[in-house]
Image 1 (cartoon, rainbow, N blue to C red):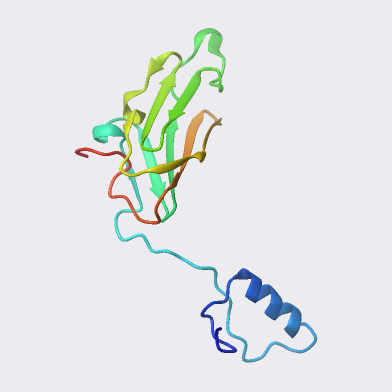
Image 2 (cartoon, rainbow, N blue to C red):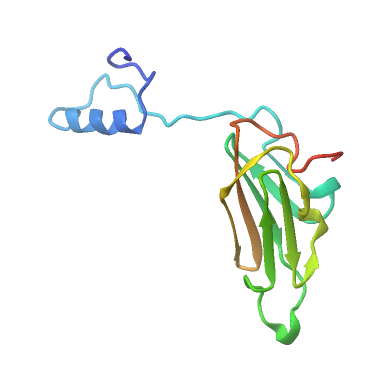
Length: 149
């Protein structure tokens, strides 16, 4: 149990409860509410996919890794990229991306750590492939993919 006025142990629910309780009187001597933050000790973002190749950008928090790649090149009949031309296969420790029937090597390989496959997702939005991976353990990864980077 946290001390009154202490930010320890207080999350968003504590903040909301405090705001309701304090709504009837002016807010004085009330500690500010903050959401938890988890600093990432290594680089929290980078570029390059497997072996540092390609135009892949990535960013991470302690629990998630986001990979992005701008889809370039015209498809037949100048149509835009869609989920039919892009396939992403995930396992608990690897990723395979296929673009228009060809394996995209910068986003195909073993990941630097394990992920929850059933929570992870991908989407093509504004000609950009976005892959969101949920890490099995809350930690930072030095690189998105295993091996020499």
